[in-house]
Image 1 (cartoon, rainbow, N blue to C red):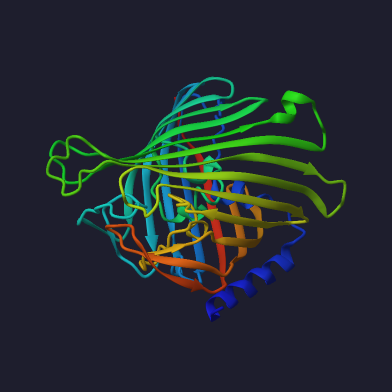
Image 2: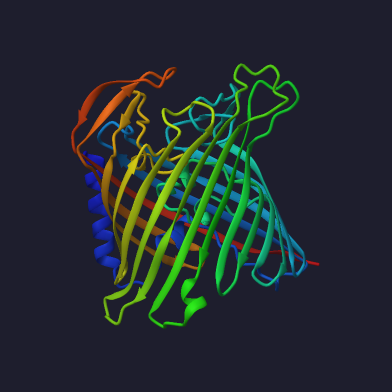
Length: 421
């Protein structure tokens, strides 16, 4: 562990030790996600809203699955909203991302799959994209969202399907979204349109279709005050292609699928310091339906986690193993293909992980979170392959690798009234 990670870990420990008695919430709800609730009492109000995240994340990856890197920076999202009806809200603004130590950014969407052709245009000072959202809530618990949807970690996908740090590296998702929340079901269905093309364009169009749902099984069977059972069902469908990009050097259609389902349980504990347990086990699936980007066409994995709410901390332990699994948008430690450019395939990789998180609300609209994670990728065999033939060559023994990740985040989300009509 290098000096930077040690310093950050000590800083986090000292902060936690001195603030453990403060009110805390889950880091996902306070830092990584956005509130989707519809405020019906702001009718005919023009409001200014400011959202921002300052982050410093150090990924000390070891082994050959992915190279380590640091994410120091911030994003800001100022916007203006108007709610003409109780069921309709319109919001417009700009999303701007900056990494400290960099002043030029490719003018393209973030983040892409391998072999996607990026443009040569450069933005200065910030990577900036427009933000526009129309949120329509015709019925209680039902929402239709057009434009910039409630995306990224709001989908609440498991780590093998979605990397939480994309809240610091990807653009706000854009397209259409349907949200349905009832006593028995939470459903999030969306299309994120990432690349639009014109007639004769040299690029490919690209979009992601997703479903993230949670069936609340205990509500269907019987009501247990201390036990809440649920069944998660998650699907990601990724497509690259297009029929009108006649001048493109690469016109072959490429489609991939990630899916996961399992069973989970929230347990309310009767102890003073141990307040809640969450247990979840999921089976994950991968398929390359068209194209030859990745070295195998089908794969699967098993993911399990145990999360404990202890005082002001969330402590999570988990295990993952897979066979020929490609994580399209997930954490690279949960895949079998090396992302470090060495044409390596891991044979049945296994990973155990432990995470300690802390977050609390500093005040209305302000929240701070810190975490420290350790991932152990166990010793296994690997093969090198030739990209154009997918032939596996010599077998390599990959040693046990221990990766460390730590981060500190400060999130801001506040607004005020400009004018009432």
